[in-house]
Amino acid sequence: MTGRLEGRVAIVTGAGSGIGKATAIRFVEEGARVTCVDIDGESVAVTAREIGDAAFAVTADISDPDQVRAYTDATVARWGGLQVVFNNAGVNLPGVFHEATDEVIDRTLDVNVKGTMYGCRYAIPYMLRGGGGSLINTSSVNGIVAEPFLTVYAASKGAIVMLSKGIALDYARQGIRCNAIAPGWVDTPVNYAHAKLLGGLEHVYATIDSFQPIGRPGEPREIANVALFLASDESSFVTGTVLVADGAMTAQ
Picture 1: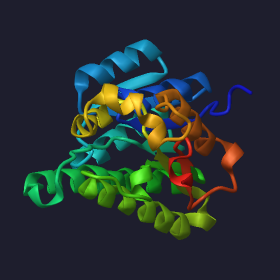
Picture 2: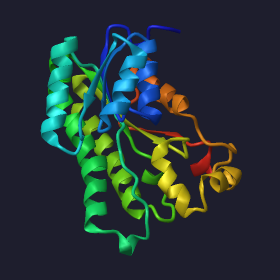
Picture 3: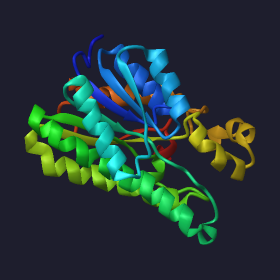
């Protein structure tokens, strides 16, 4: 199947690398026009250049509501509508819980929780005017189960699960679907600081079958395919759910 997002407009945050970049590319492959958002202006510009005319790069910090509103408005002004938002950007600042500074706690909640809230809040009015849309929020397996050194991160990702369910209920009869994706360990830079606390990335990957039964890290494009499903009409009856893509990590 091709053209599953033909004629649709999407916003993808965290599009400078990892899952966000892979998803922006995947959405365009299926016919969408995409606003690529990242706090790293250089990396998101590279993503947009690689994609071509169907992509538009924006440098923004999703924890700032004014910046989120600005790129949402700019998306509609540029592309003429908004049908899909993938609130994927996030931070992972691991550490021993009682040693977590106020700055770490605030930054984690501001980006992961508030940033996702803002992404949904500013998109919904446009989706209501356009007859509906799909909101997709990146949670994590750590929104379902905890791991050492990730207490603050897990709390933020659990909040995204309940945020997604609440939005789904609020707009179920108005054509707006909202779902969360819960990836397991995926080979992306956001996990590298955690890997250091676990003995290093090489050690984590050498022993990954001890916690991720599939025996390997996920690839960003594999999660992008999950986001594509949730963005497309193939998931028209799916809302308010958490779609887990974790190589059986949480099946144990």
